[in-house]
Length: 346
Image (cartoon, rainbow, N blue to C red; front, side, top):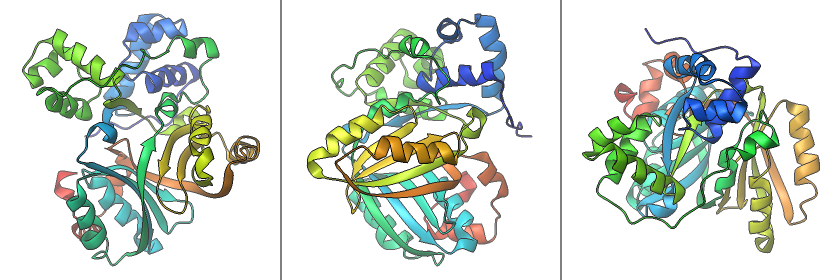
């Protein structure tokens, strides 16, 4: 039987999770050093969270360094009574990274890493048109993802603690090696896989696996990620902001927002809006304050479409369990077939 994930976390466990969000492969000793806790305390609290699936670790490729990947964000309008089925089918696809149901109840936002133009054409010209529950969609290519937002800690760490998590200096992209594919595949399944296991899967030594992973991460070829239900960290208002920025102010605006403690994702896109921002706030009042005090003063912004999130089907390439448990096999199967997924592999 699948373990039941936690319904709540105390303050100490939340702070441990915050460290693991910013540093997904941090050792128990490193987590304890940042927070002033004993290694034994960290192990006692964190290990069960991974065991029951409350925390999951993975890795996400940077499309900049994978020329065959086409990163796009879709806004998909659906029949409201079918939206969870469509979201579930999208989440089961191997090429989706994020799948969220937006607050209106008739729209899905999904980020895809598609394997080349043919896969993109298949999705947009065959799979989506063949799905009766889908009314319309808009596609936005992700031109640039701003990585600073990935070190989000839910505001649970002090500035001193955050400073102890300072990442290693960025280095030039390493030249591709044959072992990279095996390393990335293993880390996608479990981002905290031991170096011994990584070495076994890649046919190399643990020391080589460690050095290579360090090079891939510091060269921003891949991004390590920890996935958790943000409600456990006190986040109860998430929203996607589709922002229109004057072209000359796009870079500055994106970099300003990417370092904000409530911003989890920032990307420049094609389409009517040219900046996509994911915001995580404690409640609607905090979201309102963010819009007024953070977005408001940015003079380069000419328009904004704020879309609250109603539910999440997939994050960082990992399917949320609640959607996998509740999806039926009848109508869901039909939606899955239309969208080109394989429910049997979910």
